[in-house]
Image 1 (cartoon, rainbow, N blue to C red):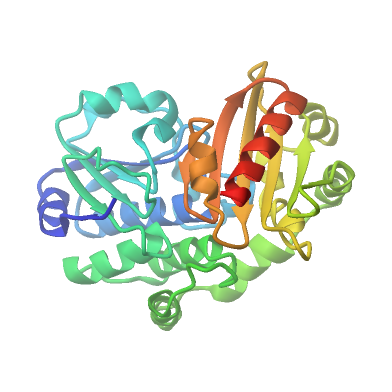
Image 2: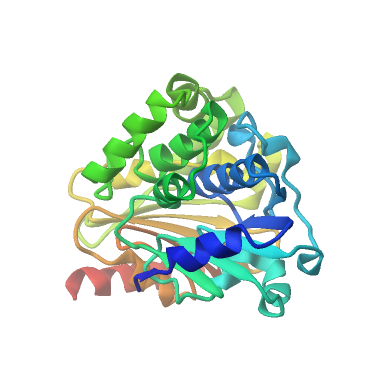
Length: 323
């Protein structure tokens, strides 16, 4: 669904005094980068703004400006305006979603095709590479000064959601936005180093464990891996250590759909990350498990053991490839 109510969005962005900027649970680079950029932009215009994510900020993104100030709990009624960014559906706000339904002023900015426009004012542009790209164009229209900190936060969002410009959402507009952000002072060198180069011995040991679970199905067209809660606990790691791991099975020649499954702390709950390399719509597959996302990158949460969810998922992916 495409919705562009930017005039109304800009009106609401100037209407209040206190703002809560929220993004989705289990946040990635685009979620954190875009949310922090919006918070800085609001503060630059004299507003009181707070960034919130129910799962906090992943370790690999805590160097970004404003990241250490992110809160994991908030009372939405305490804020004049709630700005929800990069949430394909309201439920991805986690435990905050019930409060959202009762708030009188919600702005929804997103680039997921599954977004149904749950805000009082919405910008939903599925053709955009990232929510960060949407904010970049919005900030220009709004008259925001793109400081080096804002530029870096937006750059990280765009850079990671295109997977270093390897994904099909790497449009000319995305390249141009990144060029403009670098010109504005985005620290592209630190972004590349901290996100895609720096690692730890524990994370490499985790990768070895997860790679050992690699399984191919459908004559090599489907590939995937799993991670147990025990794997993370024994190595003293948090789930954000798994960031980018799903790219390993996707990189196998001949693979058209890839997945990574991990156990959640809640017993009998599994989180899945999906990727595709052709026209297979993994967002549609994710929706079968009450998830969502993009055609070539999606996620979900399911009930069952790792083994049970894996079998159901492989069957669903196979059906999608055949369809």
